[in-house]
Image 1: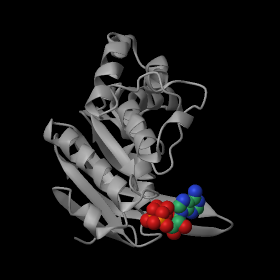
Image 2: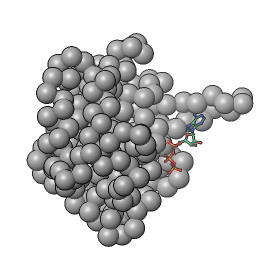
Image 3: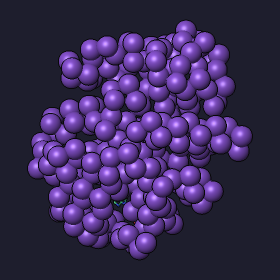
Image 4: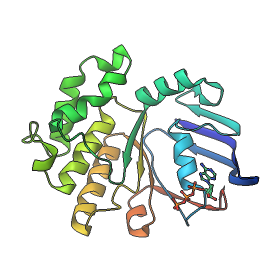
Length: 221
Ligand SMILES: Nc1ncnc2c1ncn2[C@@H]1O[C@H](COP(=O)(O)OP(=O)(O)OP(=O)(O)O)[C@@H](O)[C@H]1O
């Protein structure tokens, strides 16, 4: 599903050269649940940004569902991002004036026509899957933090992404709600969803099928 080969990312800032990723090889198969760990500055966010087609590597190749992303221009990249990538970020906010259902449907506006078809039905189905079937018309200020996070997860999946990328998805949540979110990610994965999650917490990473450790821009285990 994801095939990265010799990926480097070099930043030039204020006369300084920073190697954020130093020749990373990584393959992630369809249906895997992978955790990425590593101390601050080790390259995890840079990796996630490249996986999510939000940033391009300085060199190396990246195949996403057989598309060579490393050679795409910005328009092609944003289309592939909208169609193939789902994002969940820590503290990822909902639009406050839209209902849960309307929030989940927002990414459909930017999707290709094929993905737009049946979008509303998928959004309703996803809200049921995340346990919010009774709250389709609730506003964000009528929901708890855990419920908002679950709406954000439903929203990330409405375009049926090849991969769900989660950056510290349990970061701001108390432990009971963290467990609910991780249980939800596990059940989505059991239903076939490919997931890559960055986390600082070993207990959370344990839920993934495989954990990759970064150090100084390289995978060390
Ligand atoms: N836009 C940028 N310009 C310059 N340097 C950057 C930029 N983004 C990241 N870096 C540098 O690249 C390296 C890797 O950063 P990255 O954000 O990927 O680490 P991280 O593992 O996600 O850290 P954290 O856990 O603190 O979020 C760091 O040395 C960082 O300072």
